[in-house]
Image 1 (cartoon, helix red, strand yellow):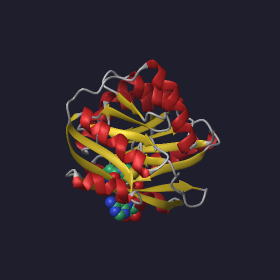
Image 2 (spheres, rainbow, N blue to C red):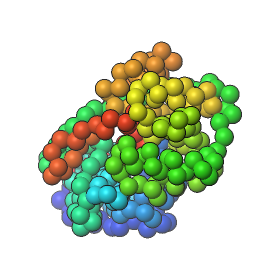
Image 3 (spheres, rainbow, N blue to C red):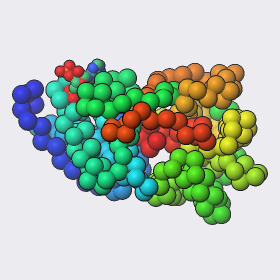
Image 4 (cartoon, protein in one colour):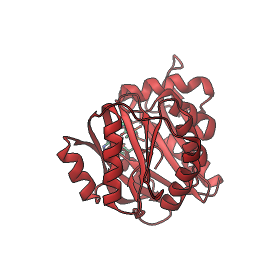
Length: 276
Ligand SMILES: CC(C)(COP(=O)(O)OP(=O)(O)OC[C@H]1O[C@@H](n2cnc3c(N)ncnc32)[C@H](O)[C@@H]1OP(=O)(O)O)[C@@H](O)C(=O)NCCC(=O)NCCS
């Protein structure tokens, strides 16, 4: 595709999930086929193809209940960058959320933030992906049916996001694990990613409680782990550092038309930059 050609942006269909996964896996991202199926089925996912009909660029928009929408999976194959593809796909993703009349948020990589700033997004707080190894017993069990309602309630109270169907999707995956605080005022989930366990979301009334929960999660898992943690959670990140975790990449939360986004008090680990 020549730089001057107009971009033909298509709405992705169910059978595009493997093509999306190929693109995110090539970029070293952690999303799975189940994630791609969720973006396509539950959200509005868009793509651009090359002459061989191979997906070379994507973006997805998820509209949550309660007035917020999330943009993610803005990804352009390395050989096709700087031709306006991300900007064209963002236009479609933003329009999808504007027509749903929800506020537009996202968590941006440094390269993504350059694109989003040019189209009016305003930066808020920083977060880091922490990477390390869980050397626990591997004995964590699947969530009990009664956990679901507690997780939904605590997530909604903490984030203000109505993402019941996203959480239900996570909880229904066979490898998902869930830990609740004894007082039922905090929870953490872990789900399998393409490269590593993704621990999050973790919602808790304070950092001590958050640290206690993540220790339990790490004691129940075995293998590589990612956690996306707001940079201001210093007690939490100190614990991760002590356990040998290191920051792998950074993100910044950005919003369109809504001022600078701020960090909700009870959010200690995100569901992931692609879900907020
Ligand atoms: C970030 C990314 C999506 C940009 O895709 P793209 O199609 O090259 O972006 P565009 O062509 O629409 O860029 C528009 C403008 O944004 C700015 N920009 C884009 N990528 C940039 C980068 N890596 N660094 C600095 N500025 C950048 C430039 O001003 C660019 O205009 P120019 O090419 O005329 O200089 C792509 O580099 C990518 O897939 N990176 C890896 C995955 C990633 O980080 N995705 C973002 C997730 S939030």
